[in-house]
Image (cartoon, rainbow, N blue to C red):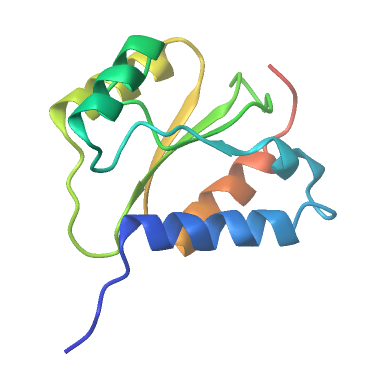
Length: 125
């Protein structure tokens, strides 16, 4: 039986790659996670909602303008399974309408490829 890595494990692997690749791609130092997912105790979840955490916001953000885009949002999913929710689709559409590039990536390697492709876009927004 083949074990599929969790979304958490995929995101950790991506962030390890980004940390190792920052000398080659300095903008990767700006890549950060948005802690809006995962299972939490009800009190912690309520506190985070009060602080502004919103369901559906993508998992990662790279605030580095490229081409016509103001920055890159990355929604991480497992390599197998893990659907994009209707709330996530709304966020993706709204962010794209405002000039951000949004990608849904299945696994850290797909996310790595999407980030590198984004960083190679010419011009700055």
